[in-house]
Image (cartoon, rainbow, N blue to C red; front, side, top):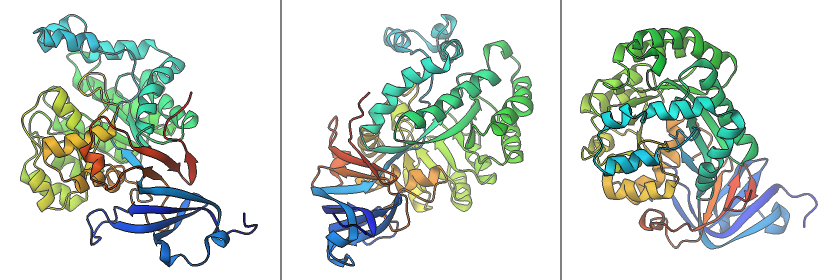
Length: 416
């Protein structure tokens, strides 16, 4: 082992899917490649023949990729990973013919998740979130966004966000926390959504911001959620506290949420099945990414497809995510979303992979990851595959061999 190596580690015997935008190949493919890492960042990424010296003098540790492919670390850009309880019984009731209203009258729906989340302490919420997170990490996820939104009061929302932060302390993952207090009207405020928004803007959001618990602010802008005017008030409060915004928009109807979040320079508009061209154009002009959520599309048995061709035509980045949540997308596999994104939404496998790397980073406002290039954070995944399209093709197979988090190598399976 060299005593004065230039780099911490060097990966060889692999091909790269760099996912660099505008590359000649859709995957930014580099055969017979090498990747050098120093201080948690990529310092070399290219053909092995272009290495600036003999391997022995370059790196303290040399790793063989065994002929596999390396991609950027996967990014799950939209999850509700922290919550109490589950709604499996409601799933069963729906299949037996119960309506949403009947389930709600029986104490189900989001109210049941709010009650369970409020009742659980931080340790309990951490314990139930860990298996969901571990499933994602085993598939090469290195960055995950986690929303609040099942507390719906100041103490409970902050509790959820603290748990999201704690997950990054006990697992090798970068967590981006999002405040989603405007998810639903809490039971004690039923019939008074404006009063709840007043409380959220005057009390909860300032407390969250002062504690440094959120990296962004989200809302559910929908007929069964909050109006455009109510959402605008949340966004104005977020802006006053220096927090970027994103939005659950145009999932069930077109209220113009995508245009609103674009007007605030928002990071992303998510779901967007009912998005029209005017909204797409607004997003393109603002640099707002789209986040596609095929798990919710599947679980809700939706038929209205997101406007993929319009998003392509106007150059809007398309991220893919699990939308892990207890009610409409209890999904713990980002690889499955690649398959569903291709099958349901007709993305290409290269678009799907970009959706969980480069475009997902864009949706979180992160410019230091999502592609393999010098200067980027060394979040990497080694796969035992012959071509990157296999990641979208296979269903239920996890070919992850190794994961690198900010330069640190870990096994793909997380051990408690």
